[in-house]
Image 1 (cartoon, rainbow, N blue to C red):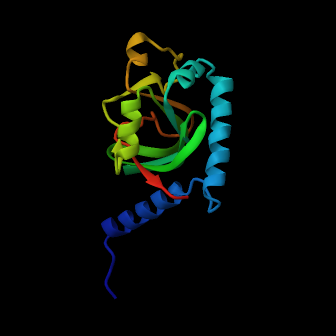
Image 2 (cartoon, rainbow, N blue to C red):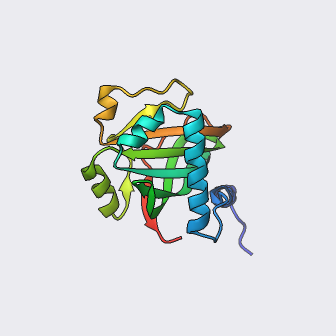
Length: 185
């Protein structure tokens, strides 16, 4: 029998923990469960962040990620599933993954919505085999609980991200570096 090093045991334990954290409750009912969660998330956003209604009204599409689970212990990752809505109708389903490394420890869950403000931004997202959020995403709501605001520069951005509903013991939430992939639920 080959002895397992501490490093290998730690890596195995961390992998198991991250995989367990990724089970964010979206079951095998596929699209129906995702749709229910998306509608609940939009209702929560309307009730608690009514200022986002303006973005919702002028956007050409929204990617709603109702529940993202993020965990880290040095290495970190997040996972979630959601739906792309165009004119309030679901057109596709997406998963999102994010990996990170650094001085970090903890776990949290949160929701986020990406508002596509231009047809070109929406088309780029839909035709990409794996779209990654980067510097082209403008945040209209800080994850620190600051007041929502839409400035001229924000409204003119092609993609606006709103992160909300954080719960857990990990500081900060961001979609930067997150990869979105179309799925069949």
